[in-house]
Length: 274
Image 1: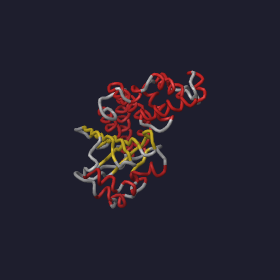
Image 2 (image 1 turned 120 degrees about the vertical axis):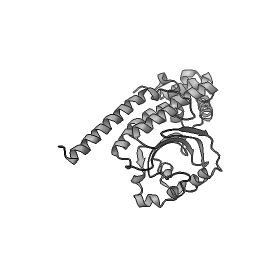
Image 3 (image 1 turned 90 degrees about the vertical axis):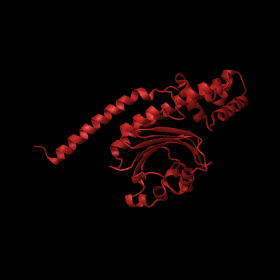
Image 4 (image 1 turned 120 degrees about the horizontal axis):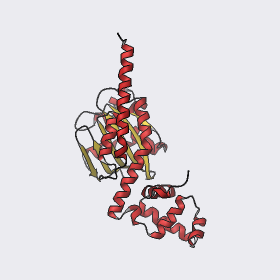
C-alpha cells in the first residue's frame, strides 16, 4: 500500500506531465498570425488549458484615457473579443472607478512591468473579498483567484495585460507562476506577429512607413546613432530625427526602443545581433 504522501506526489507528477504535454501543444498556435484583435483566440485557449484556469483575458489598457482599446476573453466553452468597448458600459465604469486604488495600477505607479503577479501577493483571502473589485464584479461569480502579467505598449500609460482567473479550487501557485514566466516572451512575440499581419492586411503600422522611414528605423534597430544613420543614408542628422518622429507617430509609440521592437517583429531578419 502507498502512503497518503506518496499518493499526493504521484498525483502532482501526473499533473505536471499533463501540463507539459499541453505546453508542448502550444508550439503550433504560438505561430498563428490571427485572426483576432490581440492574440489568436486559439492561443488564448491553449494558455487557459496549460494554466488550468477558468478564464484567460488579454486586454490593451490605456490608463491615462481610462479605456480599453480591445478586450479578449476565453473560457472552457466560448471566446469573445471587443474592439474599443463603450467607456460608459457599467462594467467599464466600475473597473476604472477603483483602478488607481487597486493592485491593477501597480505597473503604472511603480514602473515595474516585469514578472507575474498573483492576487495573493497583495491580499489575504479576507482582504480580497473586501475589495470593491471583488464585491462589484458584475454578473456571474466573482473571481476568487487571479494571476496576471503585463507588457509595455509603447507609452508609460499603455499596457498589454494577460489575466488568468479561477472561480474556485486551489489558488495559483509557484508552478503556475513559473509556466507563465516561461510563456511571457513567446506571448509577446506572438502578439507582435499577429499585429504585423493585421498591419499588412490594412496597410497600417510598419506597413504604412515610407521606404526612407523604414531604412532609418532599420539602422536604429542595429543600434546606430542619429549621426551614423545620417552618414549612412546621406542625410542630415536633423532629418533623421524628423523621420523618427514621423515613425513614432505612425506606429503610435513614444520611444526608439518601442518602434524598433515593432519593426523587428514585422521583419525578424532585422533583429539586432546577440
